[in-house]
Amino acid sequence: MKKKFIEKSYELAKEQYAELGVDTDKVLAELDNINISLHCWQTDDVGGFEKAGAVLGGGGIQATGNFPGKAKTIEQMRDDLDKVMSLLPGKQRLNLHAIYGEFGGKLIDRDQIEVKHFQGWINWAKKRGIGLDFNCTCFSHPFADDGFTLSSKNEKIRKFWVEHTKRCRAISAEMGKQLGTPTVHNIWIPDGMKDTPVDRNTLRKQLKKSLDEIFSVKYPKKYIKDSVESKLFGIGSESMVVGSHDFYVGYAIQNNTMITLDNGHFHPTEQVGDKISSILNFVDEILLHLTRGVRWDSDHVVTFNDELLLITQEIVRCKALNRVNVGLDFFDASLNRIGAYVIGTRSAQMAFLYALLEPHKTLVKFEEQGKNFERLAFLELLKTKPFGAVYDYYCLKNNVPVGLDYIEDILKYEKEVLLKR
Image (tube, rainbow, N blue to C red):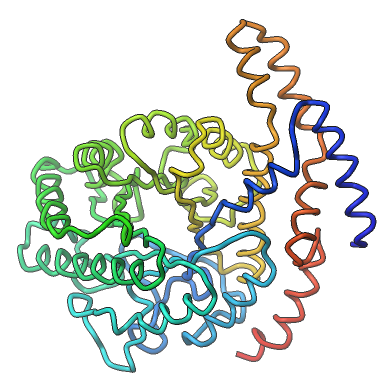
């Protein structure tokens, strides 16, 4: 897309938003502060590098599709991530799972992982001036085969996962310390039952006991931010999930941890955006995992849809951009994985931009004065405003492809790199 056309379109858009009392230059400066954490597992379909040719299994995790070119080594994964970030405006981080360490070809069980297995990632991130986030990996392991990890009634299994998660928090804290930006460590477990349970209570007591043991080790918040993630159901846990939303909301509030809101982890008719202002009244920060569920938690590539828009609008309307940590969480193996990242990240950025371009004070004034007609008229008018021209200009300013120009770049990388793997 030609530079002159982009700049002219932006100037026209700037004038239209100015009529509504919105300064697009200030909005773009705000957008630049939104840091999106890219999930490494989109590059390899959640396989990890514990052993050669690893594939995920167990714990309700499933990637579908067999598009060629998935990353098979850490070097390939880093090349892919570098390519992704070269096509994105704004700021990004990288989110790692514990199975993505550099284990030197040795089988290091998860209760034995150390910082040294992730030092290469820390060095990689430091060189690029980005932060890292981290996750314990409580699935795809023999000790997760019966569907229970931190809530297990088998003390050997429970202690194994407690030790694993403790080590993940220690690794996270060291990442944050070395990189000068706190690492978000997220706890998600697949624990639950396929059929109707009788003793939910003991399982939840076990989970609370495990979490209390894990969080008994304290780290400075300038190094690590802890979060716990709920789910409505999963494959193999259709009837009951131990770590439900109610459980984790209670735990997070009582223990001042973050709670993770993954918009694929709720009933399709639930609005995750509506939960944000409620939860922010009781905890300091939250973590978002942005995805797109189709009929279930199927982790499709994030698109600019009503659900995503409400989430970003609520964050902006709450003036909570500095209290929300934003990450992506999808794994789609049915299309080019680089393209999936770029589409998903740009969609999230456009949703935040759309929210920032609202004349918030005017809309609130209408609402408080009972001017519901005027409020609705403005909200409908905003749908016709050229926010796309503003985003195109943002890409131009960041020296990345504008509009659909990234497609050619990705297809070239596919031909020269991905299809040769």
